Image 1 (cartoon, rainbow over the protein chains, first blue to last red):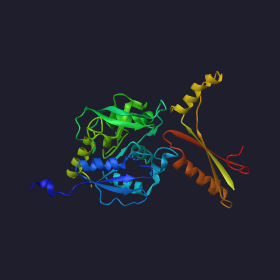
Image 2: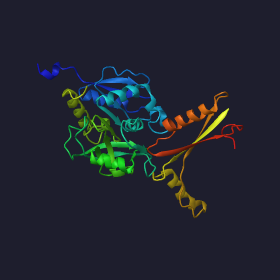
Image 3: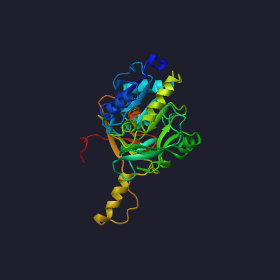
Length: 234
Length: 90
């Protein structure tokens, strides 16, 4: 018997907020990667023994005030924030990225696309940092294609924050064809520890050649499974 | 009833696509000479009778700072106003 079959499968929590759209796609991607998707509910603090957390895309609480602004105050985000500060890998995709910024777990903010239009198309990206829990499986500098679909995806931060992100190699993904006007072509960033990553494009929509533009999104899950198996997380 | 008005505006150096879109439409109205358009939000908080003035001010500021504005991209001002007209009336 191979030793890895004896290891319990990694449990990855996927939060559902009212308005989440991509939680099922995320769960499917997690299952396809060989891990166990664990559904987490916005109004409960329980993390159900997960070893990583995925905040999916969508429009949490309708985004009526500002993208991600209300979700930040949900019960589950208290637990996610504590776990993230303790080293648990957390990824926020699209609306999840906005929630991470609103929560202060990542710097900056996501604002309305410069051209005002909703934009959905495959986004060519360059992997700028493989030194995170979610991108270690990629080759440094690799060019990948992952779908983007958003109206509020323009990353903004003040000059000193941008300088800090660049100096500390915390820009994780950069657009090759900036679809929204993000400063420095930023598509994804990480925290100082590398366990929290936010990205606007949707890796859960790029796991199957039949339904996506590539299978490049699989690397996100391969990275975190490797990270958890290495025992790097609490 | 005590009414507090919170005005939220994008910081001056943050691009406001809504404002730019409106500015771009002005020539169609025959309006010339507008150099800049910025669009913000006005939020009215009506506190119940009996909440003391100091608490109204403190709570309004808390709501504005934690929720209504994102300090990374937005500024806000708060002001107490007379609330004899129903909300939304002019």
